[in-house]
Length: 426
Image (cartoon, rainbow, N blue to C red; front, side):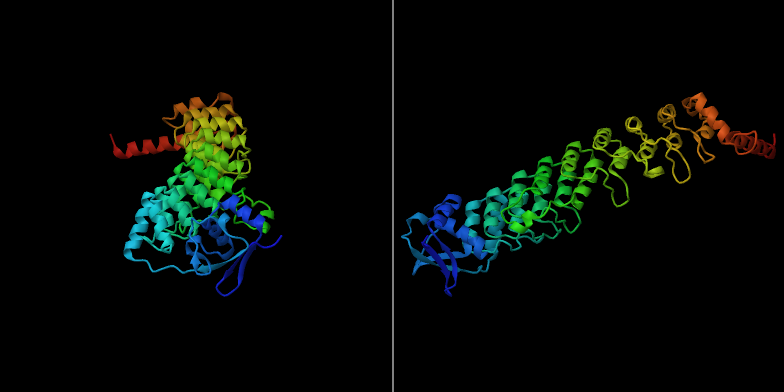
């Protein structure tokens, strides 16, 4: 098919040659105008439509001129013009337009060829950051058309996508992601947009950020689209821990559905289930267990979810973990069991529940639950230990023949008291 429209630069270099079908497709996708043709050309020359002039001879074509009215075949000349120096009044006007979503004023400034990436505030916020923070969708779309840098950072090291995640604006988030904003780019503080959205409880933004990981954008190359989907990112791992600590079951479900690891550990090697158990988020514990989280058979002591729940008096969590067949005999480095730590903090009901579930109350420590139960003032603890368990424990933790640890210590305590009374006199 013969070429109907040829566009070249001032130097004579041909930019593009279009036949009738190409022109019809541009009209269908972008619209029937010179503005639409410039938008199409911006993908080739990487210069926004605001910095393009199209001319036939000495006649400059206007954005509103119809593409379909060109007398084909025709040759157009493309002139790419630089940004102009902005005045303080221009910067103030751009900031105000971004804050108020005044798209008419924003368009005027961009047609005036004001650089959209200029810093507008003492904090180095750019128009894109301001439009994102204020939810100015129309202005944001114009700034993206003008080629505003999606990855630019403000003085706090935050991108426009980070601001969108903070504000919880789903439409703004969607626009930024469609334009190619990096989903897994952390701020200078190390926090990802996904983590920010979870921390703020913006479920809609969490969903958009996760969906974007699986959706191709118009800016991705064929090679990128053919690459396998990435394994769960650091952002998802960190977001899972944030959502777990805050008890956000809906966010956790979304994150796990995006191939998040239910066994993800934090920098201190603590699991999601451990954090949920320690804090007492029973619904989260149930969700993680249903998703396949291990109850900690390989963990010991303070790293064990059951141990953490007992230490903090999380009765409902203890019940869930025992139902899930958690290892009730887990002990810490000094061989103190879950029931020992529960009793140490006065959680007698948990001690009783553990004993009923089959935990041996004895430990390798002299300060076992039995020892503590037999000490003065611990009658509630003694009642919590079933007789059969207590009898079994009593025979297994002798300090010397014929005396239990507590009996031995009671002799010392009584002797110390008698000596003190002798020294004090009548």
